[in-house]
Length: 148
Image 1 (cartoon, rainbow, N blue to C red):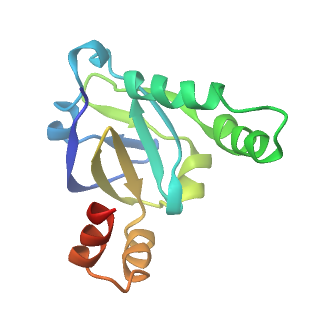
Image 2: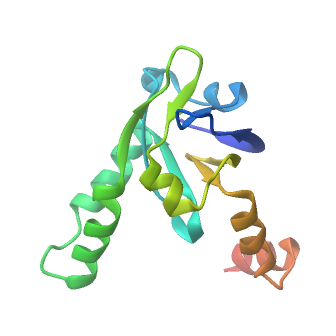
């Protein structure tokens, strides 16, 4: 089972490569240790990065959408064509398309979050704005979610 956690910072190099922290690379389970990933647009302005076994679960959800429903077609058309395969090179770097970098507002610095089954890549200023929009504390949100 995939288990990513932690917060890291890194930078995109001149060839649009991002080196994943070793701790996150260690979170890839053995069946997925072929270093294959799928990255695509994430919620709230980030990039989602899924190991291949986790992407298969997302793809199954997408395959179960109903093509005769407009919102389902919209989700497919906005998410899937922008998603792309990626592979770690021998030193643990991924190349990210300019299209995804632009979509997330990432210029050079990258905030990397391990979120259990996925990794999120954020422009630090976009993440800061995201966090500032919540008026409730961590405790208030956790209490509300866990109580339901």
